[in-house]
Image (cartoon, rainbow, N blue to C red):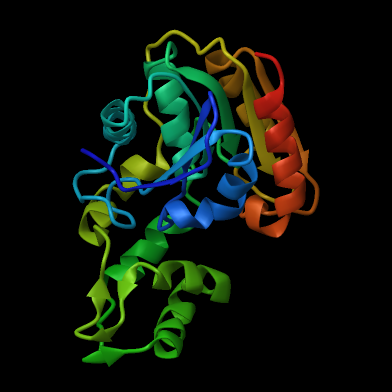
Length: 255
């Protein structure tokens, strides 16, 4: 599956950015713009998101989509930065195609089962009835009681077609059906990725915990695990300067 791509910058090295669940390529714009001064950068809409095609959701399939898209662009080797679900796709890429991934940065996710309410929220969204017409403020008011958060409602709203005959613009049915795959992590019998890896977690986030450190290092022996104090799961939004500093130091360091 060929994915929608936003490309910025030029350089001898390429960095690929992968967003989280219900996100899209442009959500990582601040990171992409920061890296584009030095690198060729590509931000991708993963399947069922943004302007990319829809289909069954698994990490093997999403990683294959990324490789097919990069093959189409003639890109052989690349560094990858992934947040949340995109971080799991990035891990799968490094494990499945280690000869192509030069560096791996995983933002606030672990190679483990991670739910934290997504399945419950999707069950509620599955019963959502759209009115005949919907504008932005009305959409936020419709979503906020389900999400329990205005920022999460704003994230979700970007996936809804507003105006007359509103509805989901993304592959919501595929995501709803396969949410158990997205929240899980496959039991892989695979060689570890030996390249440079940075796990960057939010200090106030529950997604990367001490019990995840051993599974991380089993798959990624060179992994560094850093925290951004006072940041939650959306650490690149809450502390963009700190995230950019960590990211650029990692990407520019000798491999």
